[in-house]
Image 1 (cartoon, rainbow, N blue to C red):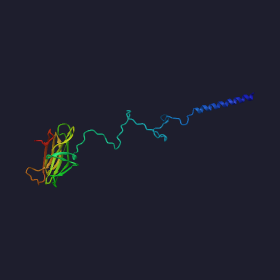
Image 2 (image 1 turned 120 degrees about the vertical axis):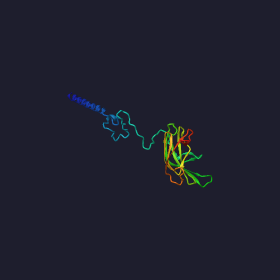
Image 3 (image 1 turned 45 degrees about the vertical axis):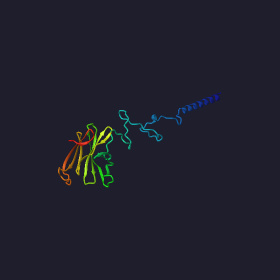
Image 4 (image 1 turned 90 degrees about the vertical axis):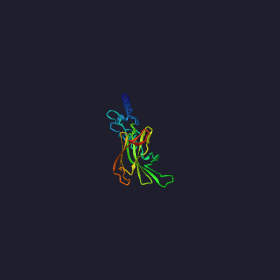
Length: 228
């Protein structure tokens, strides 16, 4: 009897021990289960080599706003405003004929069938300002003309900035074999500064007289002398 009782007690003890082992096993995290990285990671940036596709959080300013991201290199900046006038590739009227500059140059025959030519060049001196009292920026520039003769004639052309685009005026003759200096637009007037000759001086004499020519643009878009 005592031997049977001892055997039963031993069996119950083994069953109890086995039951405790099963409960401990059930409480372990199964292999392959999902873990929240944001709760378990304690470092700064993600440094787990297994986490390859995590995106680092975007830093914010003190006021909580996200920082402004600059344009990538090579991307053109968006600009507002009107396109600039290109005097090197423009057309205008000179002595009643249309001159078309391409890359600052025009070469045409002096007459139909003639071997001689007339060359018109953009000189490279420009001025910007309002010539028509409409608060829009106009442009003025020098051009030269060489023909079959010995003269070199200097002209000024204005390009008027209209709502529909730039419109050029006629070319106004400044002088023959002068030394152009500068152009200036002030108080809706075009001031042409150059070195010329005194009245009665021969064209063979070198320019030596400091001169100023004042021009205006009429409501009809014609460039003419201010005193006319």
